[in-house]
Image (cartoon, rainbow, N blue to C red; front, side, top):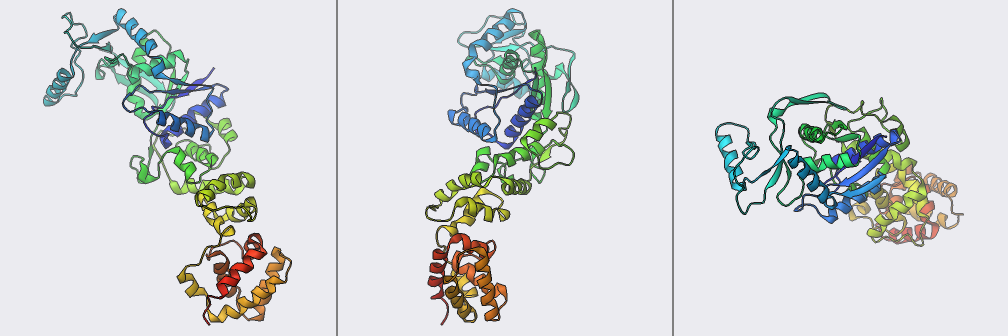
Length: 463
């Protein structure tokens, strides 16, 4: 059975790159009827926080990347790593190193001075000297001194790295906590991971891990290293490119299905399809169509995709999602039109839930027009027509068709062009010049509210 995993370090939020890695691992498992495992690699004791763990779990849940097993935590498995490290020492495949930090710093400085690549020189590898007192040793893996490591990467193809480029890495620190390259191998072995899908910043770790697998006599999983995500300018992705924590996209009004769709297209494709459902992603996903080149993050394209999903989403669901944005703005929908109806009217023009909320406010509370708008649109020329419209609106049954008829009648009676009347009317009732069609807008705001707002603003026209 296919078994994949996502194994983040809880040292910050779930970012775009991590979310895409999780998505690819999740989709591959779902495609093949396998299992997706979540593992938290929390051995960086100084930087790992419970807050970051929760941010990762929240991000996964919001994106709908459900795991079949886990989350597992490495710090709850420390005894297991220690036992395997001792096993390797007893088998002559690892050894205790007593070199102090000062010794190692001096060693590296001397290597740099000679123009050499800084690396551990193996001084305790086969040493017979007596261990110095007062130093807690680390355990180092005896990396093969010759030969090479080759694997057929599921994304990048064949990769070969010579063993003489690798030194004897630390697998267990002096405090008994495993290093990344050791812990990940033991975890993947114990959890029967068949496919390791991760960022290509781990390519240089893979030969070290393969050598540990071989030392343990274990079968190798398949490795697939996904190219990094760059900004639109070709630089490494950062906050200035719009790359933020996954939950910030939620807070800015993105739908999770839009972000999942966009992340899937970052470095993977299915023909020319830009928009597809979660079910289609599972059906189509494979490793063969992951690009070997870095993907470029385009915030505008993500916004466009979000707009497409907003247009198709259930109105009642959108209303529930927009409500918190309005509440945060101190805007109550009580006593106003049904929010789902407002959403349905506004969504063709909106790219995010936040935009929907901002556009919906005037349906529930008056927004005073700016002095500049009043100066531009409140003219003596249209005052009489708007006063006439106000009178006529009193007399109609309140629906869109009747409103439209009255507006057209006033335009005709006063020999005006439609924008000449409609623009100041918008400003009077909504405080803005940007609204959906004026008849639909007035219908939803409601007769009593529209007439009250018009009455207040008619007094502000020049005499």
